[in-house]
Amino acid sequence: MKYSRELAISYAHRWSYERNPAYFDFEHYGGDCTNFVSQCLHAGGISMSYAEDGWYYVSSYKRAPAWTSVQTFYEYFTRSHSQGIKARVVNLTEILPGDVIQLSFSPALFSHTVLVVGAQGEKKPGDIMIAAHNIDSDYRPLSTYEYIKLRAIHLEA
Image (cartoon, rainbow, N blue to C red; front, side, top):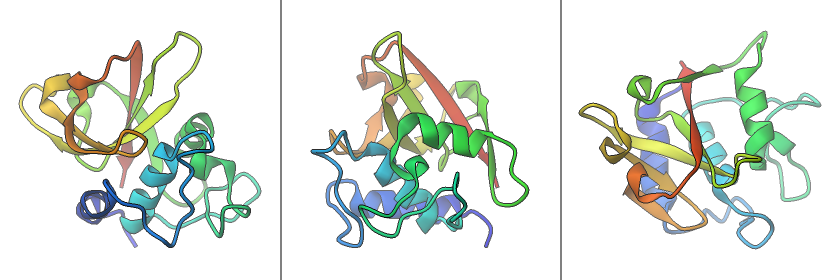
């Protein structure tokens, strides 16, 4: 199945202020942001990869690091795959609804993953709306975050 940005966004709207009981809530175990975005992408049709270095969720104890870890998520989606979806880092002006943004609040590392649910105008941070867990949000302007740097990840569907 091809990635449906619309289905991913619909899932984000449905679950941005709640938790889907089919998935463990990692809010008190380092954060639920990447878990939430992974759920959105899977709902949008991205197949799980059960490879050792894959991206999958079976249970809270049986999941790939890429499902819940900001950095490993990034590494999984931006490396070259023989199958499945690929992604690349782009300028904010190239971001589309259904893409992903990761934020860094310190110079050392990226620590937050959000799903883009709206992007219009010049695609400056105030023009981009996101959905996220941790501080649960939907249609939140990216400009309301106080981040040091960001990486915009475009999913090539």
